Length: 66
Image (cartoon, rainbow, N blue to C red):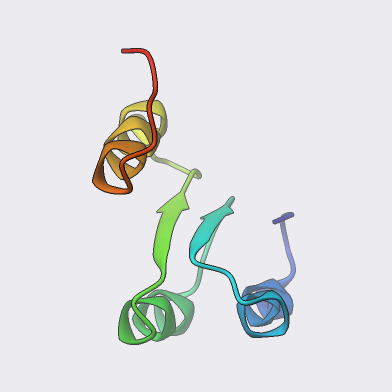
């Protein structure tokens, strides 16, 4: 999802999202995603976002090269 739109996290409900990759989230959005058991990766300020993505793929049994 793009930057600067706090309502962008609402798209998870419209599309039945199970994985959410986003630039930045509010604390409320993070709590909401956790409550809904939706996996997410926040990229802004996350120096480990590539590794986090690989870990997420592993948890979902999606093959990826390391």
